[in-house]
Amino acid sequence: MNQPYLGQKITELRQLKGLTQEQLAEECEVSARTIQRIESGEVDPRAYTLQCLSRALEFDFEELNGSRDNAWLVLLHLSSMLSIVILPLVLWSWKKNRSPLIDRQGRQVLNFQVTMTLVLFAGAAFLVVFPLLILALDLSGLTFLEGSPTFIALLVSSPLPLVLTGVFCAVEGVVNCIRSLSDRPVHYPLRIPFIR
Image 1 (cartoon, rainbow, N blue to C red):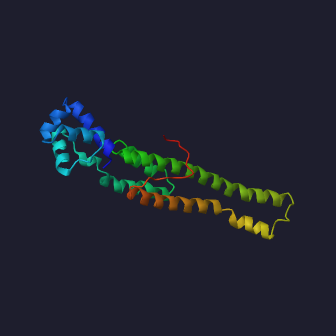
Image 2 (cartoon, rainbow, N blue to C red; image 1 turned 90 degrees about the horizontal axis):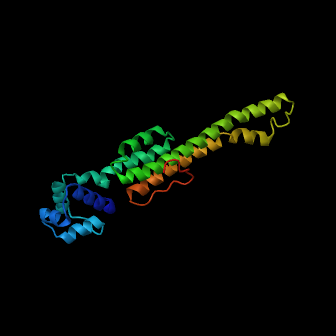
Image 3 (cartoon, helix red, strand yellow; image 1 turned 90 degrees about the vertical axis):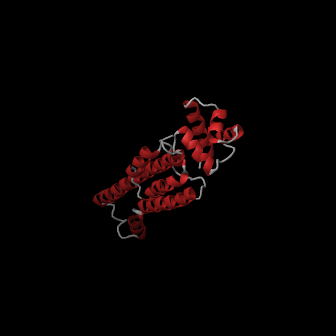
């Protein structure tokens, strides 16, 4: 569980109910120092203490549990393999307020996907412009390229940027999915921070 966020949430809920740390401690049958340490993020509350806090504050702290977020994080990161911005945008919009982890990592996935979508559009534009350029050279009488090894290499390698972008997106999606599940920081290189 994200300890600093849990502590902040307990503090916020306690204050909303108008309780002091001492009153909450008494209601949960723990010491006031325990409540202070939980709220400051120094300790992780035991399961029984968390249940007592849930009852006293009328809040389900299991909602903050990162293990419930794992399925959504996997889906977010693996969606970057598809280079479709819609799926992570919908997931992030739906879950961002329920989990700070999904909010933070979702923004990274979206920024990466928007950037890669722009790269794919640039690659697709190149695929359209390149044959038109060859056609223009052919019509202008500059046909010395036709049949040469350089021309054939250029023609064969023209879709290469699109293929490499697709492979890069797939690798980054899988690598960051594994990082997320093992509680290591995720990192998407080559992303423009559109969503901060």
